[in-house]
Length: 315
Ligand code: VAH
Image (cartoon, rainbow, N blue to C red; front, side):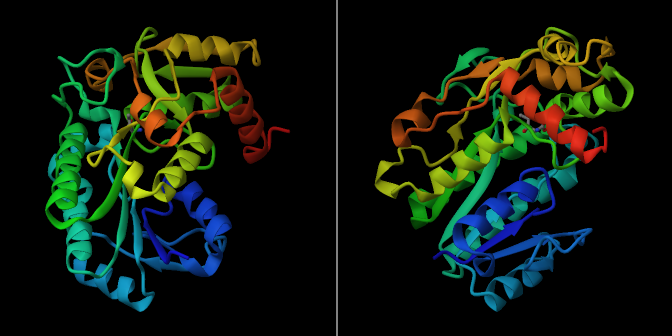
């Protein structure tokens, strides 16, 4: 059984991946960490950790005899544009710290999330292939692309078992929107239920690659459990799930909440979204281990509204 530590365990991915890993490997084999304390006791084994503090990080790894790190702590694209240096330190410098823990033999396996944000102008907008040109134009995308290069370098030079997925925009109901450019597609559900109205910070025709969280979690665990000889990618795997525009999402919500209205007021995040693909090709992940998403737009909309009605006490 792996002995796992998760950073950013209170974040959008961490708040769901932690419990999927507990279910799969047992609660005594999963240590959740984050810079802030959880609001309740649902995390059985939790340590407060600022991943920028390498010495404390190392102490916790040794204390719990960790062999596998899911390094999720990061700043998302919208916030990273406002705090570029901190974004570089948090998103990329700490990845180097974790890669060096593995190089020094402290841990054996690493998962690290990249993003479709590594693509920019010059890459195919439709069906962006794994090998498309990567000219990221956001601080977040630049930091993620550098991280991917470090992953492949440490794999090739030091045979480090580090695996990564280029997540599209992730849609989930468990946490509040976290400052990402794709987080309009999370916030819209909260606003639809609370106010029947949403002011969208992207224009109506901005198609972006998206993925429902359950698919992302399943695909992540599949990747980490795939025998290494089957993996042909050591930078980061393209993942695709669905692709939609704010207008298409709003129409899907209106089918369920007829009174719902949306207004489009693009802000600084429009230029970030314009530099990203509309949808990406994930045929390499499909070939290497049979990756396949299960949630389409109607199914995702149903579960988001159903779960948020419960969470917001609207039932
Ligand atoms: C963001 N949710 O919007 C993230 C994601 C593809 C975007 O990486 O910053």
